[in-house]
Length: 476
Image (tube, rainbow, N blue to C red; front, side, top):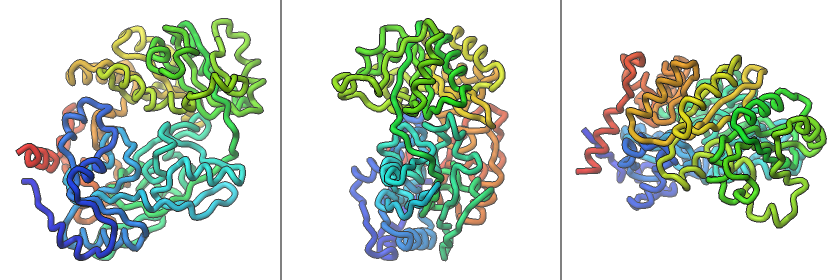
């Protein structure tokens, strides 16, 4: 059954913390970019919190968690709402804990920054730039995403060509988080303990402070290289990625005709049908990059922001806003049938498998590759664009990818396990038992907590009973 919570009692207990219970505004804050997936759009459309609470300090976070624990009201943390698969959507209603106003950059030292959870990534980078530094990596939503949201819901991004993924050792230095108990505790996580909370969707603690590593800042040049074929673009990108002396921050391959058809502000620069490699190159590496590229007779440099005229650059978004899931967003704006997958191709033989998949599906699955450093080696991840017809066909495409040896991280599922390795993260589950004994933090996102007997091998997706009950209540 759908539960009714004592929201009035909660308000009395927490005192003068910023509060919003207007149903329209609460519904808006209860959403992310889940609608990238037609499956999640159907499943999560009715999801909304009962109230949005916006703390401005750790003390206020503690007060909210203590009161909600006492009244058994679920709490779902929210950063900037830029996630893509319902990570921060409150499946059981209750409190949407909006951390956007805990946004201070607290300190910057050589190689590290300490900030509050709601600090926007672009603001952290601007603050760090004064010391000649920047964050190692960021999502394509750099201008709007929060640091803790990226840590809790992301996995990598722009910069992963050098630094790998967020869960790799050293890419997060320290997290401070609050437990949800009768007397919430503030815990400090470092080293291997960080795996308990990185990419855990806030299911086992509320992040109140983040310490991230910094690297040298550069005025990165935006470069786009065009090719007649996707195969040629992918082969060139892998070869360039393996040139360790050429400093890159971004390497993306997008198959034609998507770049010309969907990158509307770049359309005049990109020939119809062309496949492209989208790059961010350090200024001191541009001469080496050009020397490397010259022997590729089918490669055409379509844009180099370091040489382009001001009128050419006017109105162009930065290159990173053409990549990662911004590619999906731009394609969706042109063709509302488009959705996507998240794919990890094998390090050995990746190019052959990518060609096989691309040739098999044609325009139904359009190539989009991101080059990432995996365990010291350059390899391909993918966010291919899929023309959606039915859920059955989408599942068939996923199964076919897996049968061919491509690992799928399913963006059409809202749980930690189904979107990742299809198995329980025992470390995160054990930590949840310690930090959230009543299971009130972001319920429904960790299958192992909700249904320890769930059979991943059965091939069926997990349906959170609480979500179904809330959806029926909203519809009735």
